[in-house]
Length: 313
Image (cartoon, rainbow, N blue to C red):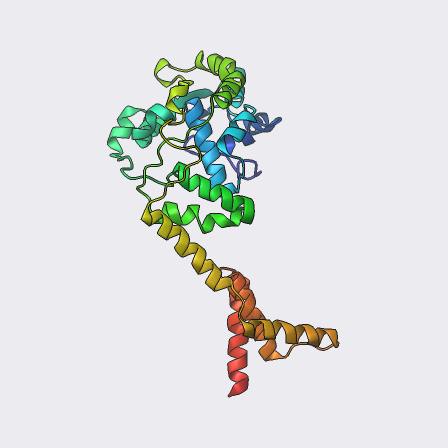
């Protein structure tokens, strides 16, 4: 939308999207936008303390993208692409003359809506808008044990397993506290080597109350009282996981009759024939079982069933 020729950036335009942070920092993307629109622009960026950000980023990738790396591997291989991009925005604001506000979500999240409105439009507007902040979790993080289960499913089933494990857990048990995920001192040191100097430079341009913190390792050190790699799930968590996996197995499993349909049609094709209406309807029913949310498949399955019912009258 932002790059469309017909789009005009007006004084009352508000755009919000996490992707803009990276998209507009690539090549000449930001300069191209500013060349077409007046530079009377206010950019609001929310960042986070280093390890809160990285643990959350890893968790989101496990939960929704199919990542198979454990947290230690993820941190050991991390190459800073976040805080360096903050430096890009700081330099761009100085170069092009637009207003830039960098806020630390780690210290603002309890009143994030009011903070955003105040930053954009001033504290009086935030008060007059009478906006209340959320009192319940939205899209909660997985607990360490839930992450371990999702990781294993990612390795064996890929990211499609998210609708069997992480999505139902977050939806059905939204109020579980994710707790803290531990990682090694080696991983901690590797990240510090990557980001410390950049964070120091960014903090030179950030108000004191919003400065980014490199948290102490003790916050994420493993609990020596717990055996390594221990997975602990409540009955409710197990129930959500087992229920969804079993439902998937039942919905997707083929019966003896299904095998007969596939066999008969395969033999038909081998002999140069084509399936009749009943066989076509049965094949589409199998496709509907394999992809129950497929709009086109569902439409055709209904159509074939109706045609078959009419033919039998």
